[in-house]
Length: 316
Image (tube, rainbow, N blue to C red; front, side):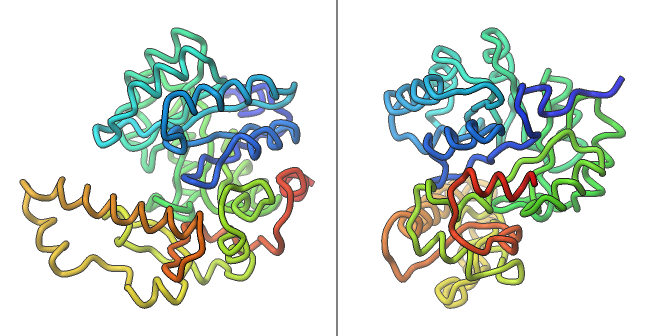
């Protein structure tokens, strides 16, 4: 028996998730996504306090329309000290789905299912896909090697094919989708739907600077590079003059310290804090330190548009 398509799973018109993007995603974007017949997701870490998260959920619930759905992304590893409280609030207030990243989704699945919230889990290979399926995940987000931000290492075709053949739950492809042809291609590989992020950075509603949005118009796929200078884990960014100046590799000291088992965790934490601060500054205010996270799918971004127009271009 075939697993359900994303549109059936979330009762939406088109099998698309507006992907959760740190600093970029907000309630206005997701509300416009829902009005356009797709689903939208926001990182819970975009909210500094639990009260702000509750307000966001209330706004989304009040604006939800037939054919739309909303969810939140949770970082479920120990580095996110807010995770358990964020999960509690989402379960108390309600959502259509949760996307888990960077850790075991077991507790999230158990708690979310008690209140009827579906859980989709980010994976980069079959090993983790089988693991989250065994824990009861409702769908798998297959993060391929064209995703923006922290990406996988396997091509979309190979990854989707491997997961579809070996898993019994829906596979949602993440990465490398910037136009309708890309969506059709992912669905032809066997994906139940797609998660699309970078094309929505250059939206009127996105919560970042006009310079960041315009960069997604002006630069293309060939301008996306991997850097280790944000979180210690390779992350895709636009190759701005500032990125070229600081380089994309760890410093010799970071590399040396990362080889020390007892120090590695703290080095990564410090690098993450420094890198996140740089990304935050570049996304939210004028600065020459332009570290803009994006994926190669910005190749198809030709102008800054409202979310509804971006969705129209993607589905027509």
